[in-house]
Amino acid sequence: MHQQFLQQAIELACQNVVANSGGPYGAVIVHDGRVIASSGNRVTHDLDPTAHAEIMTIRAACQFLQDFQLTDCILYASCEPCPMCLGAIYWARLKEVYYASNRLDAAAAGFDDCFIYDELEKHPEQRKIAMRQLTIGNARRPFELWRAQQDKLPY
Image (tube, rainbow, N blue to C red):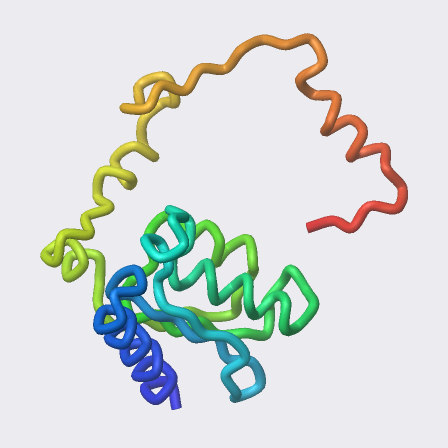
């Protein structure tokens, strides 16, 4: 069954290339044995660098289930998720992820995200894109309000 769903993700990726819709990636999310969301990469089509197939599929699955957690869901991706998508997968709390190609296959096609993995290991001030923390007196105020809020929905 896993291979069938993974094949659907690969077919989405191929369709995306043929339609010139955003890149050679596809993803499918399955809940209780049925596909509830799927998407190809939409980066260039939507002019959105976060519109990776996995992200788009997570968004659609959350809307379908009316929940921001996908704990009983499985993601099938045509390629190993990039660092951004990996973060989204953990935030969505997916149960499992299956993928076909790996990051080396993606790099060979011109989609090399090794530099991001390298950047994650550096201290923020040593990254290629300057990241500097500024001291602001009330910087922690949003977190204080959050901790004090009685009717919050934790995530």
